[in-house]
Image (spheres, rainbow, N blue to C red):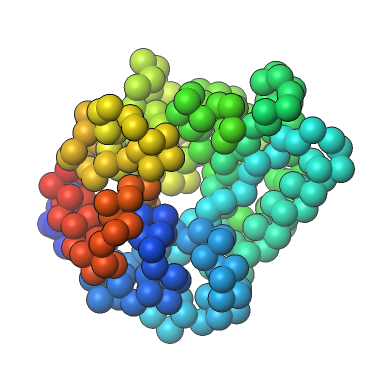
Length: 274
């Protein structure tokens, strides 16, 4: 794995891990902690505007590993689905402006229609979005979510399903994001990671809490759960991915800490448990 310093050069702060901070505060925390990458969330950019966000990142010399998120394609009417697609186009534009070539897709679901219809709408939405993203130099990273989110966040729940969609397009346009929290349980995980060679656009780490008490804020610090993160990382690297590794943890305990405390903690866990 090389030295700790070398390995930490791949660490990216996924902004949701410090939800308590605005973008300026998160950038300062990363700079102070010598974390070279950040994954941005669109609601944080919206707070201060795209151009101010871009200036903050440029002044700090911080690299953007991805933008979260696009997707959420399904909706009950054609008009609403078009509105969702328009929002995805804006997300593509933001990603390009902010200097990242990866837009993470949380594909969406709908409580109003059956799951088969939602899957069709996801496929249709991605098909519509691919040319626009490619014209902006942005790749679409389909992130499968754990099945417990199928009703409200994504009908794409396995890496295999995500790859089946991605493989309809050139690898330089559509790939997948491997988040250990969402995929660790899958009996076909390592087979599918090998299948994903050349298409992995991101790797996210956290840990699985036992028991799950809050489906959104359910994640734990690496080393506090049951996921074999190093084994998954090794498989992802063998499949050709050697890019930034995002620490993405939705957890109220972390959100109650200062940014400096969070960064110090996740750096330590990153070295020891990733």
